[in-house]
Length: 279
Image (tube, rainbow, N blue to C red; front, side, top):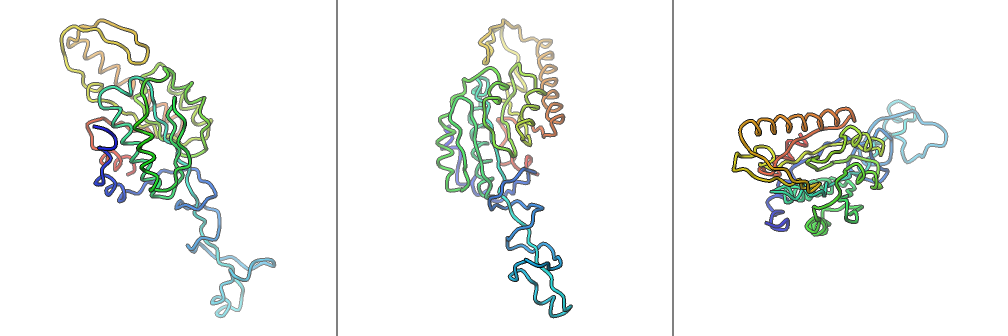
């Protein structure tokens, strides 16, 4: 199935019902995220005493009539969040159902944020970033972009991230993190680049629960290294222990970077994943 086929009108209708609540850095453009700054939006915030130089347009004349004292109306300024979606394009992310689930999740996240009037930027190492997405009407362009991504990129996520000119804001990093990168150093780099991290860790069903089979030769998608295996119960137990340690490492590194960790798989409906992610 292609991304164009998977991103249905039924999904978009469900996405319209979701409200994304990530705490994020904001820009000065007009969006739907509330700032502590006081501006000129339509939502009333507070009063303060009038001082010489204030615009008479903001005087609350009703209060003056009751109290014979001048007060200025203050309003909550709404700001536009900057959201960066980073897609791991290394070889293992093209395995099984991860390619389609990754691109579908990215399209859905982008659509939700654009509905919220946020500014979305998509970074997929090996391709030119897709920047300044602000309107749901741009979703066709987003799907076209995501459909063309090739998952055969660099072996080092750290080097990929270091090369990106990320804009300050919230960062959703979609990856299986099956590289030799030090996760703490990787997420520390994102914090240095002023990102509020959500490490969305995506695994295929065979990543989670490989079945016992005949003797085989495995090939690492990232390094192309090969290794003969005898998938008996002992080997499967060791694998699952290693996977648990891998996931714990990601979760701990995200916590150290004051970010979030979320585990998803390719068999779960994307709308269900998003409901849990934004809840």
